[in-house]
Image 1 (cartoon, rainbow, N blue to C red):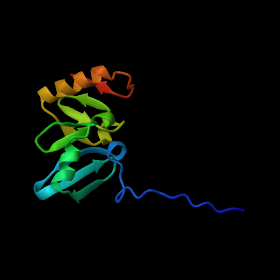
Image 2 (cartoon, rainbow, N blue to C red; image 1 turned 180 degrees about the horizontal axis):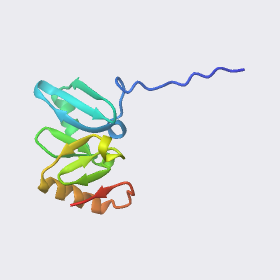
Image 3 (tube, helix red, strand yellow; image 1 turned 30 degrees about the horizontal axis):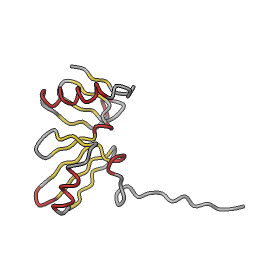
Length: 120
């Protein structure tokens, strides 16, 4: 009998930006707070790392310090962006009407996502 050890990825030390992070907020002195499905991780980053992070194509700036992962949005309703499949238990971020409209326009281009619910 052969024993196989599966290498599990430690999400707290080695997370993938596009697949694991729902949104991130930039704080003072390069401190970035990454928010995932069931975790929050704070990391200090250099100015170059911050510049590269904020230029990521899958993230959209909704406020001066908050960027959301467009691919992880499940629903948009009444000025709130929901990231989980169950709205009552999902992580959420508030967004103003103008940004909500822009995000809705982005999703009109990628309407093949069946889990997305956009209500006005």
